[in-house]
Length: 577
Image: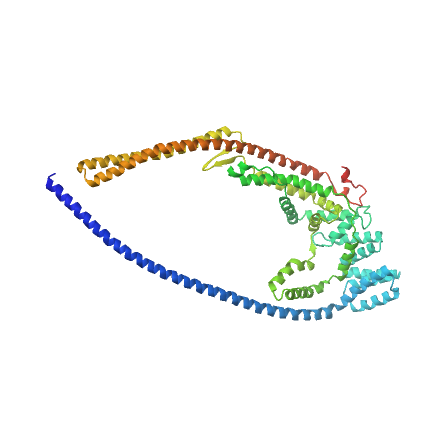
């Protein structure tokens, strides 16, 4: 290549550089103007957003105020309507059923007069017969006449009035005479009426007051059930319900949920390494807690079955039940009473219909829906700690079969989730263990993991050194051919410095990585040993807790309902077992 050609190339390169500088300067000016425009547009967008936010805020404020205004108007209207409804409903109730209230008051008066002896028999007779004429369909009036006839020893009239009362409302009449005879200490008659009342009931839908009667029966308040009449009836209820698969399933689910909600003793074992290094720790914790519920369940069952018998007084409860029965609204009164109660709640909450309806649905509607299944009554008797120990014990044993089924399902459920292997994780590294016996293998795997990471990092640094070395060689060749021109010398120097820096960094990094490997390896040894040791302890704790499963089953199977009734001749005294 001639010297003229080289000079021409140098001139072209110089011209090209000049043109590039000019283009760069022009682009810089355009970018500056464009940046200024962008800032201007951004400022305008910011102002627009601010205005939009302020407008939206004003709109939200207006909407809230408007909705509050509308709600206030609606509440005032609801309050006014409710006040009018209460007045109108009171008038309608008084017009249609005012005489019923009078009958109720007279019956309560008769019961009080029997206690005090301050009212003559003739006065009682006159009061009851006049009421009979005004209430041709009310169930309570014939019972009132029968009671008055019994007080003055008029047996034919008493039987006639009693039959009429039973015809009008069999269940309520039977219950009323059960309670009245109990109140008058006539145990034989009281037990006879109780057995008839139980016989009339259907286990699929019975009043909640059966719970009180069942408790009084279990404690022998109505007298001894020497022939097991009531007990056989209760067993018949259970048998009928046991044929209803949906109700049985619901009862078992109730007990399954109850077992799951049992509180276990606070865990004093920290499991520090399992909780921080085990991938499946949440599942391990849940498994151990579930297994520990076996002991809690056994203690719960023992607290009911082995509870000391306390003779509970039912005088107040039975009197309250009689008072409620006498004052209870008749079927045709329900709808009007419900409407009145809801209107009164609207007044109470100052027109807030939503709160009134919520209160009604939660607390009041139960007054009008008191029919439950016998399974519900048994569950309620067990859940109410204030109930008689004998009743809680009997109720538990009547449900024994389904409690055992629920317990079996609970046990099978958590056992099914038992883990055959668990995963230890330290940083990004993880490995598995079956029983914690492969601790040395885990340590070696982690050591190999560190070595692989070390080799990978050092390989990347070596690759960088080699690449920079190649570029340095190429730049050196270029520098020789360009007669050590300034660009070639500059670029070669840059790659030379980079290569030297990479070599220095290589030795420095190698030293640091080896020290880090040593420290991490020592820490991993401690973690693996502690992790495996804790897993062994966890397995031991789990097996010990799960072993109580058989104790629960065997314990509950030992007892029958016949052994624990207060009026049962074969009663077992649990405290002596």
